[in-house]
Image (cartoon, rainbow, N blue to C red; front, side, top):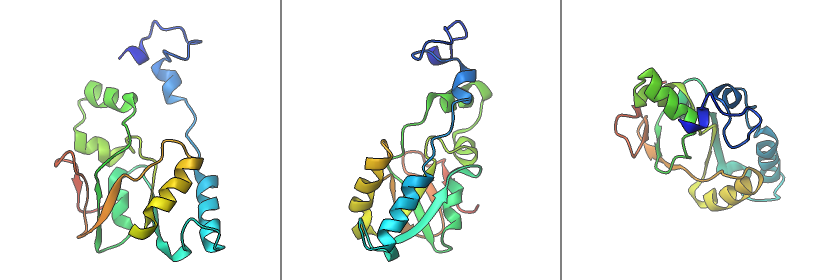
Length: 159
């Protein structure tokens, strides 16, 4: 991968080394999400507090973390965020299966907010104005499973 070319100049922002990518600080989204919860709780929009149904940090456990939110609900990820190239590199160089990648890593999707359908547009606008690149990625369904609609192999029915 050109992005990880070991001959690249470490001072160049256009071609960081793999080490530089892995040492890049994590994007912190706590403050904007706390602001969301406070605004909704205090009646200052973008939705009613009762329309915020869940929050899942997608870390170790990957998409299967969604299954911890509710015993009878499932989640379809229809429009995932772009997968950072370092994950593609790990998958190909390590010979890791796609399902295992989505079970172990966040694959670019660090946190999921579950909201009432009628509040989704307003919450999406609120969050994306504070965390650029954020967007609606899927829907809640009946049944206890989480899966990536674009890849049937990425399906989880337990945490």
